[in-house]
Length: 287
Ligand code: KIV
Image (tube, rainbow, N blue to C red; front, side, top):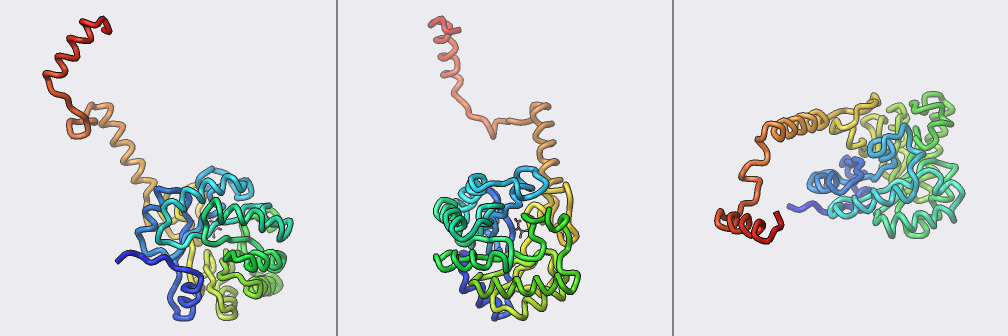
């Protein structure tokens, strides 16, 4: 049976029914075409494209126009999967007006179904404005990579009493602002449990333990396509990087050995026509 594209009401229902929500990042047409054929409920065109697709060490380098390129490519293949896209660094921090203008482009040009913004209480009024404008918003708290410099690096958040309290307050502020779901990144499982039990919208964990309503992973990490660094919370389900290297080495050696291309992968011409062509090329002085 063909997969039905879910929506924000379905995700809330899944939380109520205790059905886990599954999410991965995706950045291009080819990968999305595969994801769309799976049971994955929702995808994220993450600003982690800065790392996985562009090789930067952080996510702040990616700008709106670049994110739009990835969104457009993914949208062309996301026929049965709900598509969330990250608003990149500094496209919403100035305030609701800036956020609204840029969000409009992400939805209209990028064809995202929903947008994700990093931050809790400090951006709650911006989230509320976007929701009021009819845009589904996903929150993202805990380790927020766009502010990694201010957090002192890519570190687990919410380990102290004060920091854990702030993250709970951030989650409540986002729910109050109308976010339809909240990503909890790199926080202790007990803090994620408290949040998940305190809000009515789904929590999607990444490094936040099994009590969340759903999970998200970066697809390159999950498939073994990114080996520059691997956070503790990543589980690798395949080694596609190694498979790719093997396939490419086989191709290279077959080309070198004259094994590829063979008859099966070539176009033929009748011998008569070949002879006529050769004769005419000489007669016409072309050769
Ligand atoms: O950009 C991204 O990949 C993300 C996930 C880590 C949630 O925001």
